[in-house]
Length: 439
Ligand SMILES: NC(=O)c1ccc[n+]([C@@H]2O[C@H](COP(=O)([O-])OP(=O)(O)OC[C@H]3O[C@@H](n4cnc5c(N)ncnc54)[C@H](O)[C@@H]3O)[C@@H](O)[C@H]2O)c1
Ligand SMILES: O=c1ccn([C@@H]2O[C@H](COP(=O)(O)OP(=O)(O)O[C@H]3O[C@H](CO)[C@@H](O)[C@H](O)[C@H]3O)[C@@H](O)[C@H]2O)c(=O)[nH]1
View 1 (tube, rainbow, N blue to C red):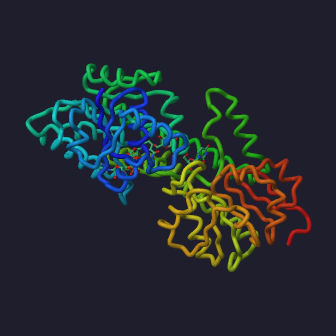
View 2 (view 1 turned 90 degrees about the vertical axis):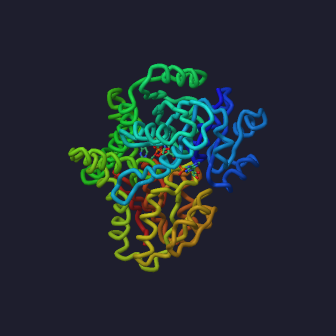
C-alpha cells in the first residue's frame, strides 16, 4: 500500500517507520525543513529506543522517505495519516489549527481518491468536520473517506508499544474503509476493534482519562497512607493483585506529566462542558495531580524551615525515564518554585538537559553526571525515576552530599534498603526514615 504520513513528531515518525517495517511504501511529510533534513540523514528527531535502527533499515530498503513538500509526499497515496499536534488552548480545549491545515494541504495536493486517517488525538466530531473540509476544498473534485485511528503508544517505549499494542481502534463511516485499514494493519497481528467515528474518538480520551484517574486515585491513597502510617506501595501491590483492578498505573508519585494526560484530561472536561456535562470526577483528577506536584516542596519546607541558599540537587528533568521530553514535566513546576524560594538548584538528567535549557528560564545549573549534582548538596529531589538514579547505591548520597536528605518523588528505593542506610528519606505515601545524628 502507498501511504503518506503528515507530521513527523512522536506519533508521525513512529507510525511511518512501523508501517514501512510491515512492508508498506511510506512517505512522511513535515512542514519543518530542518526536521526533514535531519531525518533524510538517518537521524530521528526524537529520542526513542530502537527507532533509529528500524528507520535506517527501511530507508535503505527504499520503503521509507521524508519530504517537506506535500505535493511530493501525497503523490499516489492510497492512505494518508494525519499525525500533527493538537495542543492545549488556554481554556483547556484542543487546538485543531494544525489538523485543519493538514486537511487543507491534503485537499490541495491529493492526486487520487484516498482514505484519510486521523491519528492525532481529536475531540468527538473532528473526523466528520475534517472530511467535510477536505471534500469541499478538494482539487479536481477528488473525494476522500475519513477514518479515526487513535494512537496509544507511550513515549520511551513507543516502538515496543507499536508492535505489541493491546488493540488497534478503527472508526469509520463505511465498512469498506474499515476493511482496507484492517488489511493495512494486519501484519502487526494486534486485535482490531472496528467502530464508528465518534466512539473511536472517544475511546482515546476515555482511555487517557481513566489511566490519569488511576494515578490520581493512588496518589490520594498515598496521601492518606502518610497520615495513617501505611505504605502505599504495599497497598498498590495488594490492590493490583485483584485482576478486576490490575496492577498497572498504580505507582504513586509526584503526579503525571507528559504531552498527553494533562492536555487530554483538560480537553475532555472542556468537551463535556460544551455539551452541558460537568465532568466533576475528571476535574478532581486534575486538581489532585496539580497539588501532588507541590506536596514534596511543602515537605522540604517543613523539614528545613527555609530553602534560601540551600543547594538542592534535582535528579531528573524529563516527565518520565527513557525520553528527553519535558512537556508538562513536574520539573517545570517544581524547579521554578524552588528557585523562587531562594534555593540554589543543580539539575541532573542523562538526556533532557538540552531541551531543559530551551524551556526553563529559571537560573539553574545543569549536569549529565549524577555525582556532580550530588556533590556538596544539602538535599536531593528526585523527579524522574531514571535507571541511573534507581540503581544508585544509597551510600553515594551519604558519601557525596553535604547532608544526605533525600526527597523521592518516585519511590525509587525500598524502605528496607533505606532503613539500612544513613540517609534521611522522605517519599510518597510511605513512612519517612530519619536516622540519628543527621544535622
Ligand atoms: N506524543 C505521544 O506520545 C502521543 C501518543 C499518542 C497520541 N498522541 C497525539 O498525536 C498527535 C501528535 O502528537 P506528537 O507528540 O507526535 O506531536 P508533535 O507536535 O511532536 O509533532 C507534530 C509534527 O507535525 C508537524 N506538522 C504540523 N502541521 C503540519 C502540516 N500541515 N504538514 C506537515 N507537518 C505538519 C510539525 O512540524 C511536527 O513535527 C497529538 O494529537 C497527540 O495528542 C501523542
Ligand atoms: O503508575 C503510574 C504510571 C505513570 N505515571 C506518570 O504518568 C505520566 C505518563 O506516563 P505514560 O503513560 O507511561 O507515558 P505517556 O507517553 O504520556 O503515555 C500516555 O499518553 C499517550 C498519549 O496519549 C498514550 O498514547 C499512552 O497510551 C499513555 O500511556 C508520567 O509522568 C508517569 O511518570 C505515574 O505517575 N504512575
